Amino acid sequence: AQSVTQLGSHVSVSEGALVLLRCNYSSSVPPYLFWYVQYPNQGLQLLLKYTSAATLVKGINGFEAEFKKSETSFHLTKPSAHMSDAAEYFCAVRNSGGYQKVTFGTGTKLQVIP
Amino acid sequence: EAGVTQSPTHLIKTRGQQATLRCSPISGHTSVYWYQQALGLGLQFLLWYDEGEERNRGNFPPRFSGRQFPNYSSELNVNALELEDSALYLCASSPDSTGLNTEAFFGQGTRLTVV
Image 1 (spheres, each protein chain N blue to C red):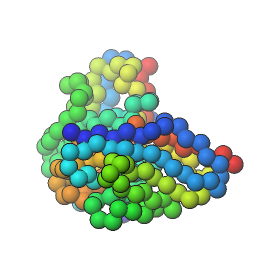
Image 2 (cartoon, chains in turn orange, purple):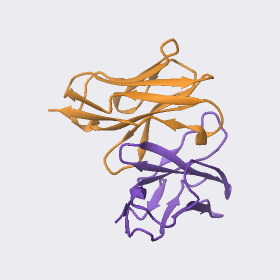
Image 3 (cartoon, rainbow over the protein chains, first blue to last red):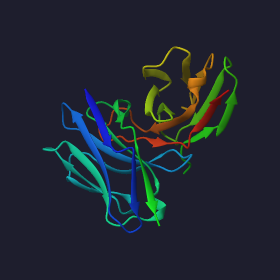
């Protein structure tokens, strides 16, 4: 079985501040982990993915995430928030099988305050 | 190259009616996935089609159904609509259903409103 928990359904940061969105996963085998971003009335866009190579994964738009097996975490960070980062972010986990086995978190809405 | 396209973008139906949502995958992609994104519930897996066959379905009643055509496009049908079916329905496609590095690409969704 696999699951993913996103801590905080809403996160607010000031423009220029650090963005930290938390994701913890549960998986019985080494997981594949994803972060997606969803802008209002849009589909999901892949930000980055972890597939058992480097534990620090760099994605688009300056985001990165670090896989920490000991903490079962895959938190998303960005050093300096932009107004354009305001969106909803989803963490997802998959352990084996095809993409149909992906489990999504419930999402975190990021608000960026000018 | 065109991405995943969904139509219509918005759909308003009356309770009890049927809704048909359409999805065209990226060229060359054989797998299509449907998700329901209801307010506050995140993404719930609905259906997976690959090579014209339904391969898996999520925990939804049989009134949610669909099909995949020979050109890999897909249709989602929701019969006997209920108010709780109001949601954003997302379609995603992937080139390979089994590859470990497979990722899916999402369309912009169809916003279904049941009144």
